Length: 72
Image (cartoon, rainbow, N blue to C red):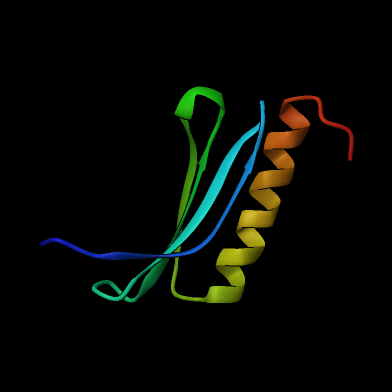
């Protein structure tokens, strides 16, 4: 089955990585993907709650920045 994903939010920080939140109407869920430098997959999370997806995206971005040594 093919699913169309609608972009909800994407945040990219140079030398840290990218966190992307998408919505799938086919599966009625949000997908949160965190990728590090070079595009390697760091984490992937699925939920049906938008606030949960966005909160997870913020937490993953903070973890990526911490791992890269970026001060808060």
